[in-house]
Image (cartoon, rainbow, N blue to C red; front, side, top):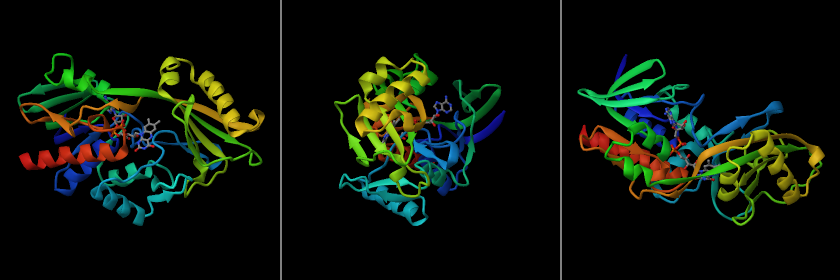
Length: 313
Ligand SMILES: Cc1cc2nc3c(=O)[nH]c(=O)nc-3n(C[C@H](O)[C@H](O)[C@H](O)COP(=O)(O)OP(=O)(O)OC[C@H]3O[C@@H](n4cnc5c(N)ncnc54)[C@H](O)[C@@H]3O)c2cc1C
């Protein structure tokens, strides 16, 4: 059994932002993450010959002054840059990959990856947590998994279950594809909400990427929901046909086509407050699903939780 004052479940933007703020205030939070690395839905997949694909979040914008200052700090350290995607909007990306943002937040934090928390229970000293055969105990527990996973963890009988279950997240099937250099590149990015491929981006056009002609294409929520359980090689084949049609590429020139399934990708209905907490003030639930399906919202949620925890002491 390992004891910590604060345990955070999830090393996405919300969990890491919260951990960072608590660490800056002198706490030593322990972050438990089921994935192999940090970042959650800001994710960069490596492939052969130095190819990388941002197969989760594509870019981030800064609406609030606070988030803009945070991004500028990362920009100065080389972890983010403006991406000119032809949209005339100021869009930032992580460099050399979107997950640089998460790596920046996670630096020096105690993050244990490859640990899926499968059980939490309130106890006299706070919370007991189980992840496979590992057990942890803490005074305050912060859960930043997507809403359906958070609901499952707290359980149907918990007073916050109904509220958490009110958040709706849509799935997204995503294609990562690479073509021979002689193939067309008709645009940098394209958003067409009514097309099956609602988003297409020339991923290799982002600053700091080393390969060429690498594309990411996302299917819209309806198509993704209908094919969510289909085998990924079949999804990749279907999405590749569509992508070739949209960019005018010859399918035989595609030498890489891999699909990824995001079961909980984009927030359709948020709960409308930055986080939730229980009556004992020792359980906090947060993430983008509280506010909006955006990196900035996940960041705001994580910060708001940290603020509340620090206030309570
Ligand atoms: C395809 C796609 C495209 C997107 N495009 C954009 C975009 O262009 N711009 C933008 O701003 N946003 C975009 N988003 C949304 C953005 O990625 C999210 O808003 C943000 O990353 C959410 O951060 P989070 O920390 O709230 O959640 P997550 O990133 O989901 O982090 C939650 C973490 O909890 C972990 N976890 C879950 N359950 C457990 C458990 N039981 N035990 C341990 N760990 C657990 C998960 O593995 C994950 O790492 C996109 C998302 C997707 C999927």
